[in-house]
Amino acid sequence: MTSKPSPTPNGAGAGAGGGVRRWKRLWVATAAGLLLVLLAAAVSSRSLPAIPSYSRSGGCGCPGARKYTGLVEDCCCDYETVDAINEDVLYPILQQLVSLPFFRYFKVKLWCDCLFWPDDGVCALKDCSVCECPDNEFPEPFKKPYSGLSPQNMICQGGKPEATVDRTLDSKVFKGWVETDSPWTSDDETDNAKMNYVNLRLNPERYTGYTGDPARRIWDSIYKEKCIKYPSEDMCQEKKALYKLISGLHSSISVHIAYDYLLDKSTDLWGHNLPLLYDRVLKYPERVQNLYFTYLFVLRAVTKATDYLEQAEYNTGNPEEDLKTQSLVKQLLYNHKLRSTCPLPFDEAKLWQGENGPELKQEIQKQFRNISAIMNCVGCEKCLLWGKLQVLGLGTALKILFSVDRENNLNQQFHLQRNDAIALVNLLNKLSESVKFVHEKGPSAEEGIKQLRSSTVQKGAS
Ligand SMILES: Cc1cc2nc3c(=O)[nH]c(=O)nc-3n(C[C@H](O)[C@H](O)[C@H](O)COP(=O)(O)OP(=O)(O)OC[C@H]3O[C@@H](n4cnc5c(N)ncnc54)[C@H](O)[C@@H]3O)c2cc1C
Image 1 (cartoon, helix red, strand yellow):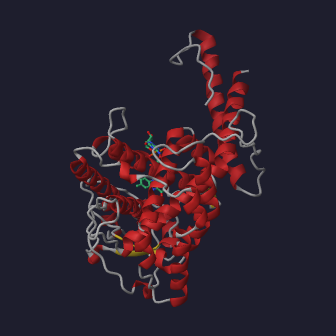
Image 2 (cartoon, rainbow, N blue to C red):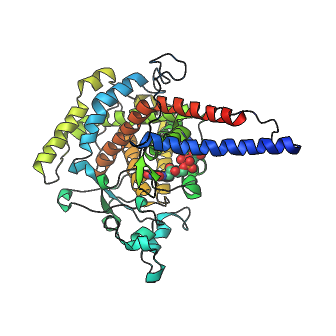
Image 3 (cartoon, rainbow, N blue to C red):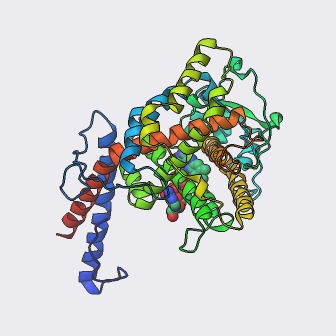
């Protein structure tokens, strides 16, 4: 972002001149804020003028030049190929797959035990759901049914209906659902009494209003305190990979918030929030790189499990839809373009090669279980749902890539649960959506927002 250096460093200007400069800065900040809101609305609403479109020049004026080129770090595919296979192959197939009954329903423990901050999160809100408040304490809007949910349920989401999970289900699809517990996650997936089945299509990952200290505390805790440190020079490759996976997932969540944002609560206007996309993801190239890394890592896990996924029983009691599922899975796994242009998205054989490989593997598994446990402290149902799904998806990818024999083939004991496969494919779809949005809108959003902000600052200074 461009900003003019302040003549008085702490904003404490001397005398009348300092006062004028303070007002000027205040005006600039206010004008910039207003412009951002207008920009967000303009790019998101068809009735408003659109943001001017910029070439994919990355600011140098050379049309077609890309900001991200060459191999994705630690992977075996370049950015150009990833964008091409995502657009032509993966995105279209995954979009269809996740709308079919097999991949549409996810089993998840939504009310959970936060081990770290018992006073926080959905766990605290759970008590609220059974509280009997006098009728006159309910705000009027809560008394009106919203998406078939009870007023208690709404109150427990801090009055934010967009944060609540819709639990409507089609009971036919649960034929043959059997589970064992995953060593990569902290929840006991076999504990049916505490699990909910959720239709993911009714609960899109989008802005929920979950912000501030509680949300930050979860991310900070994952990055700093309990599990993984920010990467450093001397960090081993395996731990660096874990950091990049989490950072890539974080980027993807931010991209989905920016993609589907509540721009105007009073008119229930939803749309893209490009300033948010820029501020949380695009401004930091490392976050974009980690998104691509995570995408390729998960893609490698899916292709490595080809035999398994091809032979899995896709049975939801709807033969037509189930055949379609099987056919799409094969189209994904055996796609010629994917196999020829990006045959090995990530080379997991390079990991665990050192002397302490087995101990390192156990350590990473423990750290990942910690991350999974921290998910239980997420204080908004929909974020918890998608957070848990995507962490289980990452855990499944890790399980696939590291359950190997000496020849790097999946070992005999390897087993995938139905919920693992659902999480894995839905995670790949979420990453695919994020890569597509960043690829399509990133360059123009970055250019447009930088220009807008610098012209606002210049106007304010003149
Ligand atoms: C598991 C989980 C799921 C969530 N799901 C949703 C959701 O579906 N909808 C919703 O509206 N909100 C969701 N949230 C909240 C959302 O992620 C943000 O925490 C919230 O919007 C506040 O954003 P922020 O700007 O404070 O920064 P945050 O996104 O909270 O980031 C906190 C800090 O982490 C660092 N950071 C940010 N991005 C990265 C990255 N990619 N790599 C490395 N470091 C990074 C930065 O230092 C940043 O200041 C979720 C939160 C969690 C923990």
